[in-house]
Structures are given as structure tokens and as C-alpha cells.
Length: 379
Image (cartoon, rainbow, N blue to C red; front, side, top):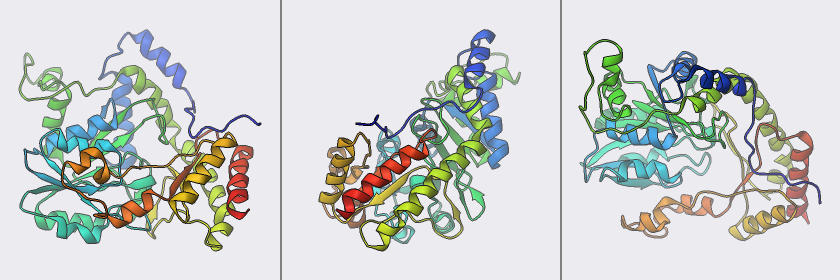
């Protein structure tokens, strides 16, 4: 059998190793060094974000965002169930409740038409998740949030360098969270960023990130010593991770273009199968620019999905599915959710399959994936 095709493979795009060596030589490896600041400045300048704070993970960024929303026990935050567990954990750990709303069948994003009915007197925020790097309907979500005085936190873990009506994702809520996990478009192994679009949140965010201290004021000469002023944690990344990330951010245009080429190749070659009703391909609404984070297909039923998954595995090709909907998970059930509460989410989650898509995926490897998908579905 030919060598296997992984679902994902970390990659080096530019000067990552050189910058890591510089960080080590400088002797400043903890959070807040030259590369950590440089990454934040690059993101701020490229996307027009008021303030970016790098974090050890997107999970950490979401946790900080939940704290900045000042969530209290019993508060509620509206979000999709079709998301990674970190979206819900960020609010649950503060004693708040995730209120799961169904997704749109086209983009698999939070259905903006169902949000208002889920709002109660306990609702404090909305957390739209830009699934697969395709934007939620942010104008509608923003209007609902403004009407009901709610915070909006974009879970943009998969959405760096994507846009909605010409505006970068990560700039459309009060806050947003990016991920630089090794499975994302731009990586550093494990890392994230908290994007602050509301200037009034910056001072407290810096305090939370520095273990609840006013250390940043001390470093700016605003106080003669720093001390404990709030509840916080160690939410700054290692300078080694930031050095790796800085090189990736420098190469973002090249990385995005290469990924888009492979995405479009999948789309063109699998379109005939969609025309025959054998699968469904991703959709990007007018006015949205996807970052081509993932290429998913939706099969006719779960039996076909699972069989194709096993067939590809037997051919040395690792495809995956996700997510197990949070409302149907053991933890989700503790909040009172029942099967069939979110029909679109449950239907899609049983039929979706993600194909390998990564920076160094060759044309030959991609063709091999396509050939096996076609062979299986047309036999």
C-alpha cells in the first residue's frame, strides 16, 4: 500500500526555527517577550483589532472572554451545540449555563433566526462560532445583541483571515478568540489570541492575563510596584511558541493561498458527485470570504458516512468526523437537553466527514483522496 495520508500535518512555512533560536539566545522565554508583542501587533495591524493579547490556547482566550463578560452563576450564554467543548466550558466554569441553539443547514453556523426566542432575563451574551472559517450572519446577531444589551464573543478558532461583508472575522464582536493549534491554518503547536474590540475591556483583560495583577501598569511606569488586584491566571504564552507563530503570521498570505488552491481542487473534483446527489459540499454565503480551514462533505446517512470513513482508513487515508453535539453529551444532558432538541445539529453531526487538508498536502495525495471517495460512492 502507498504511504498513508494523515488528516493533518504541522508545517514550517518560513523562518520559524530561526526565530526560535533568536528567542532562546535572547534569554527571554516566558510570556510577554519581543515575539509575543510582535505577533499581537501584526494581528492588530492586519485586521484592525483594537487590542490583541496572545494566550496559550484558544481555550484560554475564551475563558478570559467569559470572565470579561462578568458572568455570574445562573447567567446564560447562547451558542451552538455543534462546536468544540471549550466554547461551553468557558461559561460553565463560571457557573453560567450554555443555551444551545440549532445551526443552519447550509453553513452549519448558529441559526440567527432562532437566537431571539432563546433569550431570557438571564441571558448575558451570544457566542457565535464561525464553523470551518465561514462567517455567521453577524449583522443580524449584532442587532439582536444591541437590542437586548448582550455581549458578543466570536469563537473564531477556525476563522483567522476570513471575512464577513468585507470585515475580518474577529472584529465583529465585543471580543473574539483565535486558535493557533497545530490543526489550524496558522499554527504554533498550541496557542491562541484574545481580540478586544471594546477598548473599555483592555485594562481588566491585561490584569486577568497577568495572574490578576496590575503588572502591565508597573511595566509602563504607572505604579511603583505591582500587586494582586483581581482573580486571574497565567494566560500569556511561551515566547518559543510566539517565535514560531510570528514566522507563520509573516507568511499568512502564502499559507492562505496554498490552502485555498487545495480546497478549490476538492470542490471542483467532487462537484459531479454533488450533482448526482451522492454528497453535499460546503457552502459559503454571498458576502463571506472563507479561509478554507476545512473541507467537509455530508453523506446521505450515517451508515454511508461511517462506511466511507472505514474504507478510507483501509486505504491509508485518515478522515475524521466532528463534533459529538454538546447538548447530547453526558455533560450536556446535565443541563436538561434531550435527543431531538436540535434536529439540524443531530442530523448533520451523523453525516459529516472531514477530508485531509493541510499545508503540505500534495496534488498527488489530494487526487488519491478524491479517487477513493469517488470509487466508494459510485461502486
